[in-house]
Length: 250
Length: 326
Image 1 (cartoon, chains in turn blue, yellow):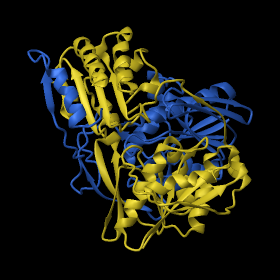
Image 2 (cartoon, each protein chain N blue to C red):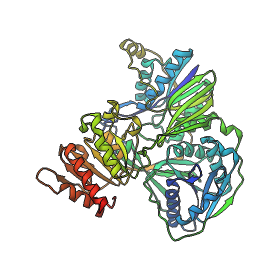
Image 3 (cartoon, helix red, strand yellow):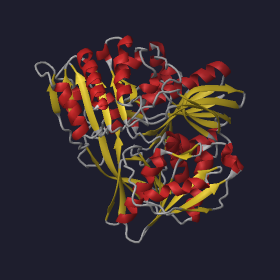
Image 4 (cartoon, rainbow over the protein chains, first blue to last red):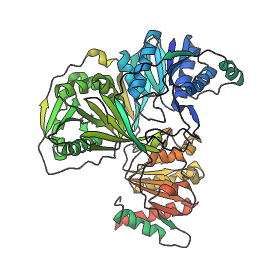
């Protein structure tokens, strides 16, 4: 079974985010960049499919030179090949999806795995867009996957429960936390990955469909009304009154 | 002048809560663009009678795609229907909820319409005749204002952020429309839906009571559950207690859990790691209970009690019981 895993490089989830001087991008200074956490589930699932039924795993990303780091992580986890579409700018999500679709089409994979969202842009778009652009079914937020031949059975998380979805290969699967436990690359594999080749494809972005006109820190003003139960016997009583009269939530 | 198509989500023969939010957002947006109009859109099987419920929210014209094919649910098929309806209605703006289904359907519809798409918007404004959408990025650590550059624009709206506002009864008229729904859009189909029994889900709840490591052990979570019951709230959890196996992943709020925006979020024994804040910082009101006055959770709290959860929670539950009795 041939699978392609779309991965992206994102700021570490613990990173403090500041706005860059141009006012529209994240300031990369001092930010640690990592493999998007959801993509780890995608990679792990692809590798498990190969361990079960043979085939190969191709990791692909759209990014600049620094993104090669995450391709090395993918290789050290067990991906067979790594491809980078050299577009440091990345543009908007549609541009990423279109470039991925163009590169993936000739590869003719059985499954395309993605993380359900990237933790920087939180768009949830790439998986469904790839399905449309490549004319194949796509299933989102998958927590359980069973592939028998070309029959695909998934369990997907929805608000308040789960759905069972059935489809056939080829298809796109977006991975949710809980799908599997991603492996830690072994040191020998990390060393081997350092010298594996990375195929480079030139950027060919379509015209942008959306544009970020400003990025800012959120400006929510909070009331900061603090009580201490130590020495204030009425703290809880006063709080309930505020919840009722001021916040009007009860 | 714009034609706004408001996709009104329905499930099992009822309009979802988000439908009224989408309707209000559409009506409010139209009021900011001179000469604009709003048409609602309901898609499903045998759903035409749902149209009348849009009237109180200001939508008088509701296009209906009622087709027996939709006795099965497929995101691709809904997206195809929405795109076809948008083209038929000459809509240049399409709004739908950023629910888990909406976030799957919206980008597909956008690709079909060759439209720019902005996901999970928390605000829509009009500047110099252009719609500018505000959305959270990096799990809410920053916001971006985004403009769509294509003639047709698709936006998905974060649930529970756009307040549904009912006005004085306009009457909504259902208008059936015919759109082509290709069979090949049913290649991935939902075969079964399994809802968690009894428990209110964090993603839909108006009030959430969450517990963290400050509860010290899984058996103490009954205090969180009792407070949730008293407030008719859903129970949430921090990543720490989910990873420790005390609570199911479905309850996890945070960057790798769920993003929620309830009217009230109560954080019990949660220190407020930046990844947790990312999941709940768009809550309308935040109440934090923690014995450490320096816990980061207090930097985002509207109301805070510095105290021991094992004293505060029972006291709060008792006070609420008295309040509800009076």
